[in-house]
Image (tube, rainbow, N blue to C red; front, top):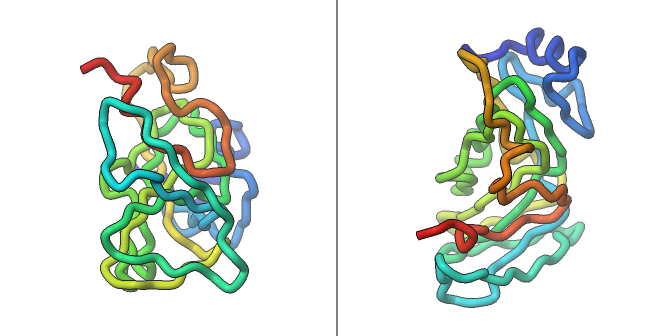
Length: 178
């Protein structure tokens, strides 16, 4: 079951959901709009290796915006830090963003219960498009979990994305055993 706006507010008041900074105007009927943070990153190498650590170059989006180009993966970050301790949060791109040919998080839409951080965005574009820091980029939907939870993300020994960051975080696939 998806949470309504009043239920999202109730869960915030009860400490089960945290959104910093919180803007009441970003609360929709059944979602919360998140915004693009001020940092982007790109991988340094043209060929990425799933078994190796792939370094990124991080930079700040200028006030006049930054043009994204097709054929490249850009890592962005939400301005908002979130904690979700009783629900599953799903991040979807805003339809207005999609209509500009911008896709975010095609593969990683769901945050585990216990995810506490900003959201790294995997951004790709269909054609060149200029983006800006603080622009609305996506929306978080919160779903109730049925049953008890014994494996919260923020206390898992092998959780790879625990370190709080206001910058995009590169893939940690190399930490998996395969």
